[in-house]
Length: 259
Image (cartoon, rainbow, N blue to C red; front, top):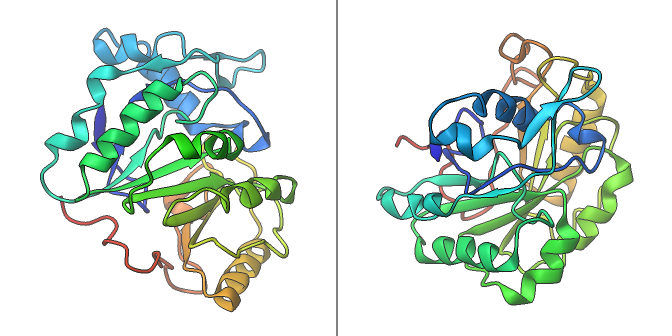
């Protein structure tokens, strides 16, 4: 239901929802679909949770099927974590997928509201639905809301996100598939950049990363470089200009704290 995470910008993942649907080119080699395909073969409750949520496309790639599973048993997990931690919400899905009803999204937000000791990071490729439902939800300060922007074709996601009443709004430029010039950073509090990893990963150019870093510095937006990616992301590493870049939003808790 939840686990400590190797994702560099968070401590733990919490997945009250399983399953998704591809919506843009950034979904082509989705790591979550790849993982869901493995998890659904398990004979325990985890296998049941992910069963049918992923399949293989005609070219052999793992893809999400569109089936959504609401895991009510997972809702209380953050309440049982006594020490503060930073939590990535739905690393295996999208909380604002059209298949997740408002009533369940409210349940998730109620848990986050009841756990002010934690920071919750929500990432969506559907900020339009986030904005549509925003007035129906509480927005405590410990809820960070982000959207994925893999290319300039998706700048509208940023403009929509800026209208969502979260204290911290962030961008995940991963997988970065092209240069992002003149990013509309007003109202954005954090930018994460990373290359695609795993089988079939598409290359990321260093000039794209450096340009985003420069824009963030000019606008005073914290910049976090996650990884170069590639088929062996550990080998390619995550250093840029000879160092790591792990900036966080102002007034945030320490990410990747000792749990």
